Length: 364
Image 1 (cartoon, rainbow, N blue to C red):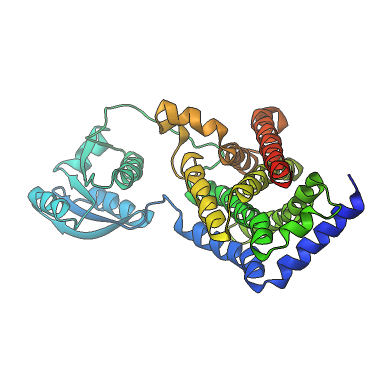
Image 2 (cartoon, one colour; image 1 turned 135 degrees about the horizontal axis):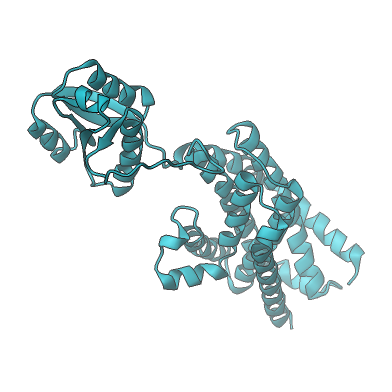
């Protein structure tokens, strides 16, 4: 392998990339916009849940409980009524998500440590109902009462690594992995196809460049761009969203490099089997979307059927998201993440080898 030929190929790729204004915007502007959009939009936090109150007690203790719901920020008190049937009607018509029923004698029972209230929830959106129920139960318990839908257990919970239970701290690091995969996959998948469409691939094949040198020359520019993208989006995550970072930056860099090789290998493999840029672009999204859905980005892997849990083991994004979240939130080290790092290394080598082998077959 001739380093000088590889260097000239890399320089040629950089000149071709930065000559295209659309590619420049895709590389440097689109990831920032996407990170900001995902950072604010992708959230499982519940705020301002429409709440209807039935207060049969009408005492300072009952008013304090209602005020605790209001002050939490999770619930919005939309009104009061004297009839529990009104809550049922509001839930049926989507005018309320939570109904709080405070029975008569609440203040007296609270003083004796045996007070209870009733919580009625609209379960149409199961995720919203589950999260709202959790918040409501915590507020009720903090006021010395017991929600009637739960057994009389003294539950004292403590959240580790994300004590505020802020979904943004959990989601934004995952967005970093999704953006890196999307940018590198799309750009690399278009690399060889673009040469074929404009008629320069044949010239490269008859040049002194060996297939391995050509693959390396096509891969290195996007690997460097991906590294710059990593620094850019991590900087935004830390300074704009104030995501806590408790781990080792070098470990994150190592994992990102290994993950970039898997994304670049996948993109090159797509590029060698596609005939047009449009076909390569669509194939890239055909790979990206299932990878995103099965990676644990949106849905926990443990909640998937067993067969899909096994399938996620061959998805590089799943292993990278586990590493990124552990490094950001837990401060995990190499000894805890070496399995994921090894998986990324093996898949990256296999994908690049497959892409190079197929390209040699085309050039032969």
